[in-house]
Amino acid sequence: MATPFHVEIVTPERTVYSGEADEVSMRTDSGEIAFLAHHEDFIGAADVTVVRVTTPGGGDGTEHGGEVRIAVHGGFVHVDQDENSVRILAGVAELAGEIDVERARRALEAAEASEVPATPQAAATHDAETGPVVARPSGSLLAMLEPDAPEAAARRARVRLEAAGAAAPT
Image (cartoon, rainbow, N blue to C red; front, side, top):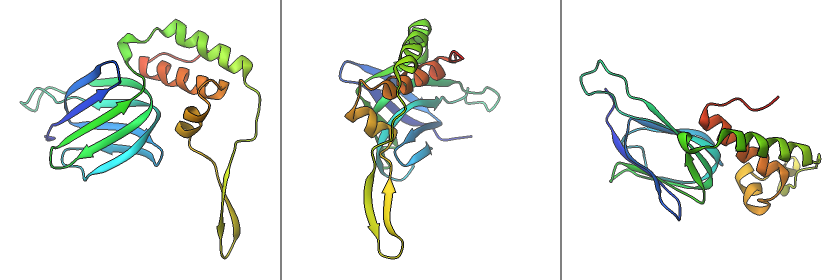
């Protein structure tokens, strides 16, 4: 049986989720990551992502916990091993049940209709052996730098639909 730990997801307006968890999984700028009890200290940038919080079971080993899904539109994640806790600080976050699915679908359709294929901005570095190395900025960085861009709006709408368990329009 997993050892539970404390999870808190907060925005400037409110605490979106606070409770015990067996696991938290999400996407950061470094990629997909899952946190379990007593995870080593960690600080990272949260991508525009669905955070999945697996809640503890019934304690007798026969009842399975549930899953809480939260759409997070960037921010930061902090894991404190000493406190056995995970905190996500987000500008915007919504529980799956709070998401207006039809509004998210309309937002996605509008964003996709106004998207213009573009060459992503890139930051160049230099490798002594191979020459210039081009790295694309992360999705969360692009969303922060250009929040009104159609690509950023489409990513947010897709995450909201995924969190709500709804299919994106085809």
